[in-house]
Length: 314
Image 1 (cartoon, rainbow, N blue to C red):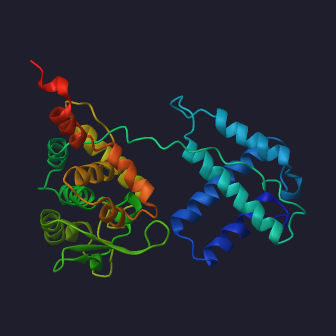
Image 2 (image 1 turned 60 degrees about the vertical axis):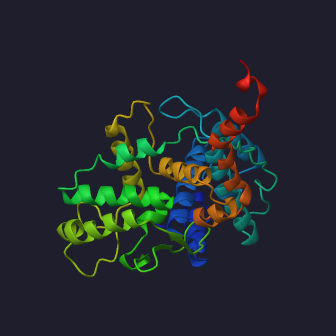
Image 3 (image 1 turned 45 degrees about the vertical axis):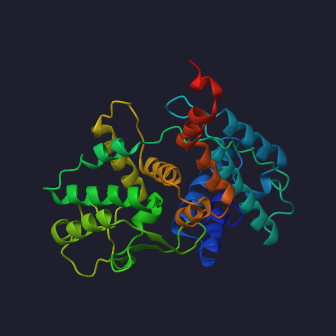
């Protein structure tokens, strides 16, 4: 059955294809399609199926719906997620207006919720990281892979999706660099990677990866048990399991981003220049990187102990 060319369902597909032609990343395409599908479901609950039936009142109602929505665990949707979902709707209707599928843009003046810049709730110390690194069993091919993954996350601070997109040729062993191709914002960058992490990658490549995928044509660095490129969703849940299995006395939990937060914090505490860290993390704005200076409190504590007069009082 042919779809109505004016239906939300049909036009969503056209819009995502428009973004694909403009070379948006697969992750962005996936997210936009998912967010628009959520919006379409909301509209269908109001008996709205066509794009021209969406009014400003509908978009405002949708914004309120996101604000009051509770996830399965009872927690509200984060401001970042609300903003991403609303941005997808704004982008969609902006395109619909330009393409004359609708007469006016009902989301043109839809205000985005103000994002709260909060400090990372959890950061590991070096000892806790070492405890987690010892969780995988290096006697198993997947254990070698897991150790290499954790070492890479800890040594480079790269994002989950960036790690999943690594290919064999993206590790420069001679110069000690890891190449991130088309990272967030479709930007390439080189990130230093430590000798220990490279040693574990080499051990995984020689002893673990061949057991997962003997095919020489597969270029992905990290593979799942079926010999295919590991996906961000599966990687995130698996790293979360590894952290939980460490049973840290502090009770800290987290996943891939936990290692990114830890990497940034420990690098700053070790004296790394914030601008150098900005380049390594792939942040477009220095302010984003500077947030980690608020987490790195060891130097502040040392200064307080040294200079506050009450600390030297008898």
